[in-house]
Image 1 (cartoon, rainbow, N blue to C red):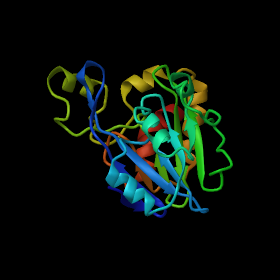
Image 2 (cartoon, helix red, strand yellow):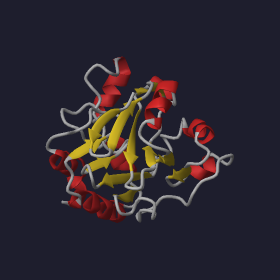
Image 3 (cartoon, helix red, strand yellow):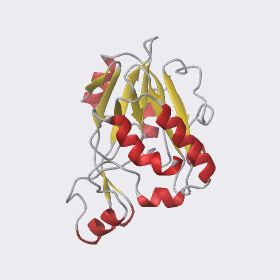
Length: 229
């Protein structure tokens, strides 16, 4: 199922995945239709027949983005289903999938395919390097893990305690503590944060939290402002 989120952007939630130590994570992807008609699939979820039919109604899948190395679970399935699509990897992903053919590793400069409609910047950490995107037509910032907000009770027992200490369950979306501590180059992270905060955001999509449709810039300032102060 695809749900319209703004001009030329749709969202689809996928299955809940169990990660290390039994932590459960929801999955979410975005689909962006470029001016030429091609679709960009960001952080692909499990491909179902219903989702494939919905995509066919929007246009051809031209690009598939794996925005960090924690969100590549379903990449091979999409590559098989859409062999004409160009696969765009965040840093580190190509090495993990030697069986797939990728375009150049994504960096701080958008490739020509979407440079007129999307901006991007890389946040680098010891956990994963994530490429953060800004879709200009819908004024939407897209992140997977560097902003999170799990609902109360999602994690239980000792996992719930860890989630709270990690700031995964704050009252408002924010950057988990582990990602703050894992930033590899504080000066580079500060520059990336300033770039993100310069975007005229009206919406924020994250993989692990309810999409933001109000006070988006305040949410981003809360998540990244500590880096730039």
